[in-house]
Length: 293
Image (cartoon, rainbow, N blue to C red):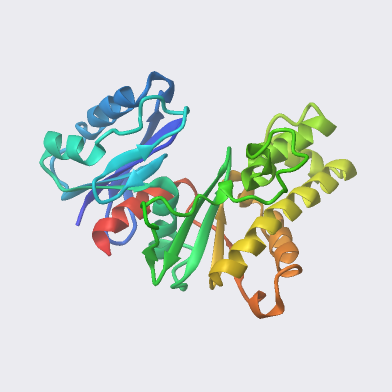
């Protein structure tokens, strides 16, 4: 089976043809131009899909935003893609290409990709978290996505890890992603060293022995672990797969694992905390797996 898969992100969109072994051919990446709004994003996607010949069986879409997977509709998207909320992706693409279409949220798709082809292949029950601008999440139970009553479960970035009282930003400042996202890490680093404009500069300086930045990394890892420990106590997963550019650092994943296992109950401490292995192809492969499972 040959599936054209696309992964729509706020900055770039990736697209390629996936087969049943997880190989990706005719891969390309283009600027999403999300600031131009949802209708433009979808119009560009249709143009790119039309560049593939008709020798494929289905189309699979991984996308930012909350997704009604059954209807293939965007339930909610934040300001990163204006006017994206409510867009009928499945209906629009099927009408254009006369091929079956499935649509999935990007973190759910990444979790399915890791389950089918990556770091979660040996786990039936696991959580997946991606650390970036915010924190995305997915819950996999018996190798199926758990969606919740409204289909939008696993907004892990919005759990509360700080008390509301005394937080200057109110509820938003008390959320997990306000303190444990990559955005939060770089904010903390820039307060100490204005040259730390991104993760690359930050980790380069740590590699050169900057003690103050090393402490900031440990403090941030403790924030990450605080949220993970709560999720472990609720879900009792066999594993947590952590992804996002910052988690490409093996030593950071080890640090987070150590910090987390030090604070969970002993009966939960056998959980595996594992780095995602598929990188920026996880969403494509996970979307394709919707047709292959």
